[in-house]
Length: 498
Ligand SMILES: Cc1cc2nc3c(=O)[nH]c(=O)nc-3n(C[C@H](O)[C@H](O)[C@H](O)COP(=O)(O)OP(=O)(O)OC[C@H]3O[C@@H](n4cnc5c(N)ncnc54)[C@H](O)[C@@H]3O)c2cc1C
Ligand code: FES
Picture 1 (cartoon, rainbow, N blue to C red):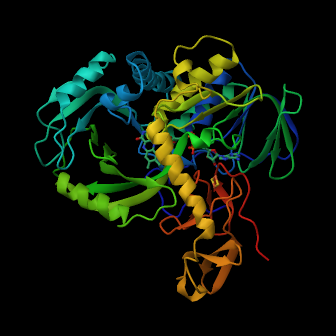
Picture 2 (cartoon, rainbow, N blue to C red):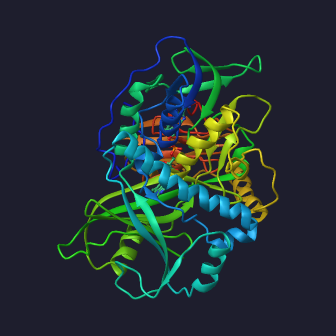
Picture 3 (cartoon, rainbow, N blue to C red):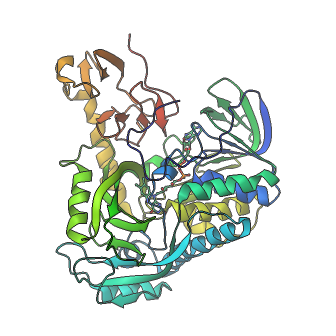
């Protein structure tokens, strides 16, 4: 089995059914690449609508960010309504909000229709004042109301030690993400849907502008009329989308609770930037936050920062029982990209840029993309359209792309380590060797040596000491200690060095 990340999330010990690799050439109507919640939700919905579907997953179902989420189901849109209205008009923000609100209903409908036991429950969410902040919640409430969101002002916030004000989002949701994925997978048995695991798609071509040919890592071909790329960040799109969304690492810590912990369950998000996100699940408190751009080393251990913050806010937490990190993609204008892939090829769809609201986005994608394939109108499709041209969010676009450009100067920077002796066991370092950069992983006396040049668009990878991976700061590709690609947009491994 390929080792991906080193930390383990709260959900990952839950077992999903397993499926074989692709071992022959295959023909299908719709091929979905990626077996996270987005790919699986799409496979389920397309199967339900009578399509012939084949889903291919590089590792195992749910082993991407779906297994590393905190699984709030919410129409809290990551940015405040006031911030969103600086970028978009009221109609767009209303549709954005409506899509995420209805997405919770869609998930609930799937659960009821198929009788999925995934700890789903409805609960309220509270957007509360963080450290040293005096949020003007009255203005935010008015901005929300202008977009059709009925938020309630609260003098206090549940679960917190201190008395701080908040805005209440009623009737949000939470569930166990992998139990939900399992439920959908089991429900698909009655449809014409076939699932494959352990099959990495290395190339996707459309030679006649009609059909797609996908090449697997064992040399087999999949021919399909339609292609859906549900790989969190698209592995088919080389450039366009990657300049409009930016890769971030985010961290989560699960705590056991003391016997006198509150019974009330709710979701919490604070007003800080980056913000903290909190939920109670299965008598555990899960707290996330401390986001930063991929490839950048945080000044302090993000888990310790989350733990310290949590202990000041919640007096009923006991021990840290899980801690893990994951990757999200922040879109330049705050709205994800769901629909037709920008470019000249036909019949290809993507779902990406979902930031920290990818659970509900998967349900939105499961409606937009099938509707587009079936040439039906979809009221949400225009606002998520990946081909949209917009000057909105230009400030973020320039700031983040300057950051990417700055990382290309890694080519001319000196070595991170002068000698291999500086690299601790189970650590990594990048060295300059002539014009090129080489990365070394120290595997107990033996050094794994690879080119440090990312095969996507030539960024220089950085060592991620928490997950023991090589991460590319430019667009977020990641590689394990052996240089094997574990996260796109790169589709090939770090090159061998002679
Ligand atoms: C710590 C954390 C907390 C979060 N909290 C929340 C939350 O509370 N609420 C919320 O809504 N969202 C949250 N998110 C975001 C959410 O988890 C993700 O947006 C969502 O899981 C993405 O699902 P996905 O199916 O699109 O991608 P993934 O789950 O990453 O699935 C993509 C799959 O594609 C496969 N793949 C990639 N390349 C290839 C290839 N070439 N060939 C074949 N397969 C390939 C991968 O192996 C992977 O399994 C959080 C994320 C993190 C990291
Ligand atoms: S991910 Fe694009 S250059 Fe590395």
